[in-house]
Length: 105
Length: 289
Ligand code: SF4
Ligand code: SF4
Image 1 (tube, each protein chain N blue to C red):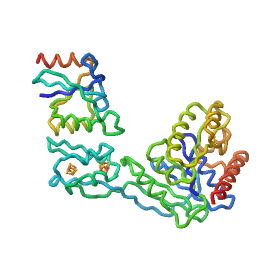
Image 2 (image 1 turned 30 degrees about the vertical axis):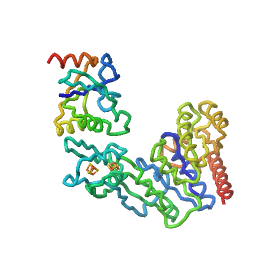
Image 3 (image 1 turned 60 degrees about the horizontal axis):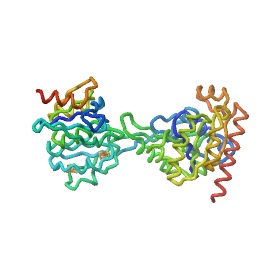
Image 4 (image 1 turned 120 degrees about the vertical axis):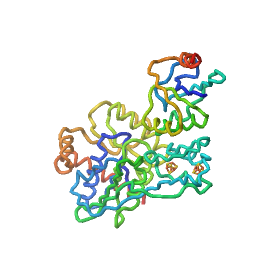
């Protein structure tokens, strides 16, 4: 299973970005290999529709779950149609803290 | 000659200048027309004795995706500048978001599988108004929910009148994005209205940057002159940009504007300023011919 976390930086010690569509990077955690990669959010600078476009990018990469600070209605609709699970984390945790939490599951 | 009255942002008195310049040109017996191109919030007609003469609907392109024919290749989504199409190949998912679509039809060109067909929606209205027994006023108004006013601006700036005018004033949309560019592209001359304040200057700089790239002739009108500082003047000098006119700040102007009146007859000083501006335009027009 692959989990995408909206991320402020390209580093495990960096924090989760509370904005889903406009975060600069996604941390992609793969539960099979227990490894984390970072990808650039191609939609980050879009004038409009950044959220849905980011979902498109992640869905194409085979993501099953997205973790971010919040999701708009459009994103919720789209992800439920695509069977992508959404998890909201409001605290400013680091990417490592979040992935460690997944590892312990 | 088409003259766009524009500014880097709203609230600089663009419409005030447009309306009064129009009235001044008419008063001088010249063939002048005015088009309100601020299609998201047109308001110039409110300052004029304008009588609605005709109304036409403006249509805009919308793609219709046939999911039977679609192979989910994602080309259309890739070509869409506005993120209006989301296509997820592995999930065999495609969707067009009406609220993001700008009607550019790029997706249609992109699709090699004949899965996209054409439809149209009403994106706005083009209205022509009568002034002094002459249908010389026009306005574009974008429908609520339409993402971009560009289509409407295109339609309204494309000869809305029954005859040609020597001077057509285009009251432009604020900002320097696509609506502004669309309006400016139709103009022979752009006059940027600014205020002599730090905010005015920073917006002016943006507009100047964009206009320099287009190569359009442009100049500046300083509204509310006397307020703020001298930086705008220094900038104009440094850039060698012509100052077309200065309209002094007067409390009465603000009051008249808020009452929906044009100032022309009420304030002789301001009236003179507009006459000077109109004469300058006449000179400019003659020198072009
Ligand atoms: S018409 Fe243009 S904006 Fe609309 S979906 Fe197609 S490519 Fe995107
Ligand atoms: S380009 Fe045509 S076939 Fe490809 S995803 Fe878009 S609509 Fe479907």
